[in-house]
Length: 131
Image 1 (spheres, rainbow, N blue to C red):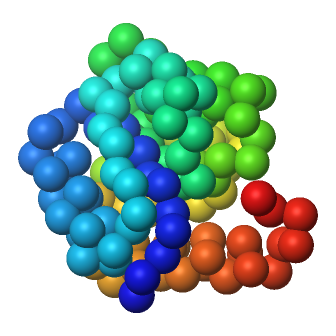
Image 2 (image 1 turned 90 degrees about the vertical axis):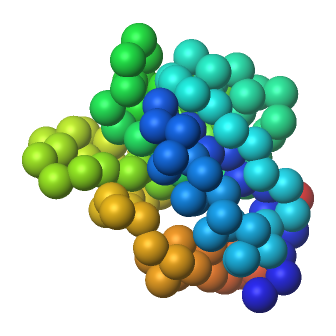
């Protein structure tokens, strides 16, 4: 599946970033950037202008929910997918209420990421105003 998506991965775990980057490369995303925390994610969302962000919820400093709120204020067209581990269901509901596009359960799988990417691409094709 070839696509033109620019994707930002935000997670404080180097292992999770590496695994997700490998999956996104298999999905043939156009460009992939990484951020280690919410502060960096907000900065990169403004400079890199990704189509899609995979964001961890629990991170030191600025967490994923805070970063999501800032990104949605500044770049409301970016689709933010929250990544959550077991035990973060209350955070997940909060994220969806604040504008998250979707969520993905850890451990992250190729099938789950592919499903989200297909949904994003399909949504873009259905929206003639998307540039």
